[in-house]
Image 1 (cartoon, rainbow, N blue to C red):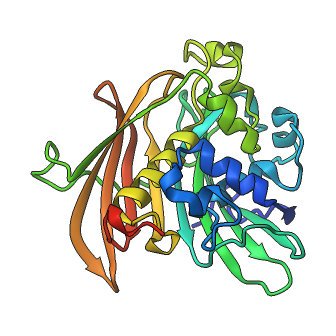
Image 2 (cartoon, rainbow, N blue to C red):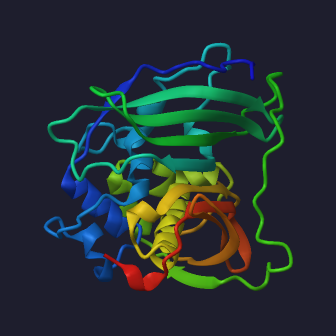
Length: 309
């Protein structure tokens, strides 16, 4: 597909992490003590939670707090009007897993390779930028994960760009919408975003009320990726026995913001559609009956909750 900005590649960026980063991530998305292989570095099966790589484009190599806005403004896209990163929210995210990340990058060189897949003008509501991001071993060229995501730049449309293709939907199985296989509730605290942001996603939108008030959210909101990663953890624990090898793909669309202190309800449906051993799982996440994550889809090996490592 061609269009403004399509195919633009950003310069590769080095990314790195420590065992401490992996532990923090697992705690921040709800890993529990019956999953010590995510929480204890000396566990014989110590592993990185599979979705950790989505934090690396934010964290890169630093162990310190960064200026989020300044870090985003360094990446203009040729042929596209300058977009304000202070008014951007997640659209949707797909993550594919090819190789498990090692517990630490120490002694290795990994890099983030990013390119633009599309830039879509949605008129007055805003502009969507769709990107592909891969985490790659710089020495071998092996790809560990591939993410396809979209950012929605609020109120920054109307510049005459393409509207973009129709999106593919993954609703709950027909006729079973009100009868999920599992329903899991997760209480978000008023401090959950402050813990999650320590992974490296320091967007002020999630830490202080002013940016969210200006964007019409009425104050601070949770990271969309907090809810997304929390859902990934729930699915892996409840469907995949907490074994990282049982998750091949995971995706969802960010349908509505979550406020600190709200309760997440994750509804999960098995479809019975299995290909090469991988079953398609559908899910939604709701707050007070309102969908906040839609189009939830995962490819998993279903083993149940009694198979934890």
